[in-house]
Amino acid sequence: MTQTAIPFLFMRGGSSRGPYLLRSDLPDDNEELARVLVSMIGSGHPLNIDGIGGGNAVTTKVAMLSLSKDDWADVDYFFAQVSVEDGLVDFKPTCGNILVGVGPAAIEMGLVPATGSETEVRIRAVNTGARVALRVQTRDGRVVYDGDARIDGVPGTAAPVELMFHDVVGGATGAMFPTGNRTDTIDGIDVTCLDVAMPMVIARAKDFGLTGAESAAELDENRPFFDRMEAVRLEAGTRMGMGDVSKSVMPKFGLLAAPQMGGTASVRYFMPWKTHPTLAVTGSQCIGTCLLCPGTVAEGIVDTQPTSPTPLLLEHPMGNMEVTIAFDTSGEEFRVLSAGLTRTARKLAEGKVFVPSTVWTKD
Image 1 (spheres, rainbow, N blue to C red):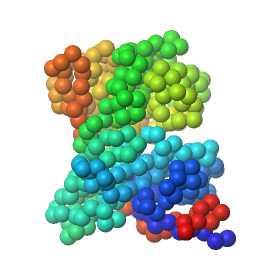
Image 2: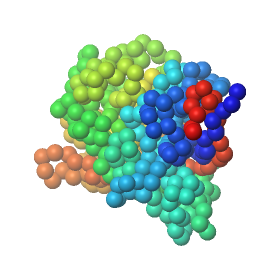
Image 3: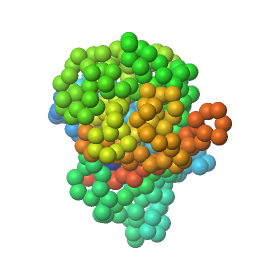
Image 4: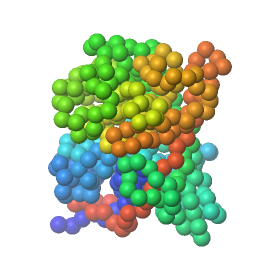
């Protein structure tokens, strides 16, 4: 069987991993592109045995890079979430963890030159329009991966990658509160429908009869909870103007509870049909905003009146994630200005990934 070879980098970005490719090495048409990515990842089998996916939603993600036509950005980052078993590809969301690897990958691919001991890479997230500045450690014209930074959910340490997110409000729906309310009630559950970096439906864990301290495995086994959560999510998607979201990973779902380990809040994040093992970078910004903004389902969890910028320590199933939110309350509205995080990334492999020529022939 002849096959089509596609150059790629295989990288961990934050607590996710997947192939990083040049957009120019892939089909222009999104339907054809989806078929290529399904074959590449091996979607359709729980272990992705015939592809390079890892059998989990955090390991079936794809980043596609190109030089940006945006006056501000260096690189355009186009993201695809490939399903593990269903043979589906969702181009609507972005992924903040995979984005962590975009800066190093852009330097590795020659899209951005390394400069000194630290290289800034300005990225436009094609899926949502967000702008993100990454600071990548470099030396002698190459990316530095070794370092002392540690993030929960990833073993060992690595060089820090600093991220500053801008233009994160309303990327998918056009509004921070797409239903027009800071709190809605759906199927007897109070929720906040919020679009900051990622459109989300956020609820209190106790309203589902949960503590908010459950492990990811415990939640995944609780199918009655997932059934009820999905019903709320589907209705919320309609109210948020997103239409039928039954086959889309957006909006994501999040649960909040009082902190268990000295953080700001206990958080559980859903992808949405499985519990995230840690927490999404985009989700941390949306949840952080929910915690800071009055009138949401999170009101009362943060004891003191916050001042901008505010660092938040979000407890997830494998530890903590810190996100700093800058905001403005000088007018009548609560406005998010930026969000900052520190994560890590590592190049795992490089070479060519192959798809059958029956799926796509580049020429």
